[in-house]
Length: 161
Image (cartoon, rainbow, N blue to C red; front, side, top):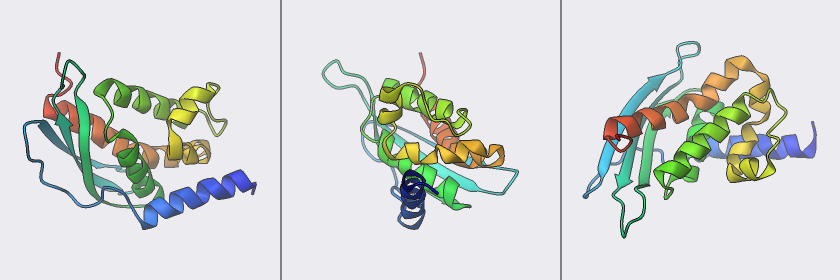
């Protein structure tokens, strides 16, 4: 195993042991909120994710002001949701959509990573899941939290027209 693979493995283990955003938080304030429960039927991983969206201020775009979640399952699903929580909080909805698309591209790379270095850099710790993309059965684990986020945003009404 290369030192890069070891570092990636350590990032996943750290996030699985000390997940960011774990523990559902009630959403208060003027913004929008949505919640989604997702299950990976092939392995039983589950996540319930709640998202808060702050309204656009001063002509800016709405932003993800908070993500909280509860889940159970393998270290990949739990760590990916943790990394995603950290990555999208404070980002505009357009930025979140780009990160989602980039992470999906990474999961389709079959372990090769992305050709676009800037896109890969935008993922931060999420690049640790490059190796996961070599295992089709594990890709669904890594994408579970992302599916919950996308559905939560849709349920919040933040993605409407």
